[in-house]
Amino acid sequence: MDMKRTFIRLVLLLLLWPLAARPQQTPQLQLPRVTLSAGMHLIQAQVAATDEQRATGLMFRKDMPVNEGMLFIFEQPSIQCFWMRNTLLPLTAAFVADDGSIVNLADMQPQTLQSHCSTKPVRYVLEMHQGWFAKRGIQPGSKLTGPPFAGRK
Image (cartoon, rainbow, N blue to C red; front, side):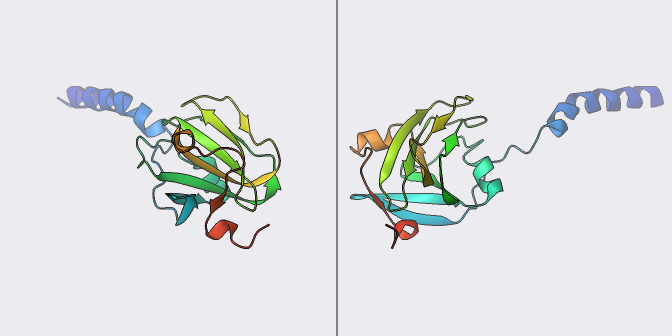
């Protein structure tokens, strides 16, 4: 009887061990939010402003409302590069200057390590569903407005 119980525990341990060994795989959903606008289109953006928040980004998200995205805020403008490791949704990254103008856009495929970079130094990157900007005619040179860009030139 003890041998059977020990065997069952060992089998359960071996089956469950890979689940316990995996890193945390929960999306961050409780970040601060800010409302941005791109012309007449409103965006509800989660704000990733710390190193940890930016490193996690939209990883592990299985869905996201149509007009929701994530705004990455960096301390100072520099060339920003993004990839899609552990990101399940196809996204478009808008690399945004201090005044809210979009410098360039990059379509990014899920779960890839291909790097997508800004074409000049930027402080902000806004990730939205892939095609969100294109469907609304928003392109490089278009301007985003909202609290992060207020008073910046």
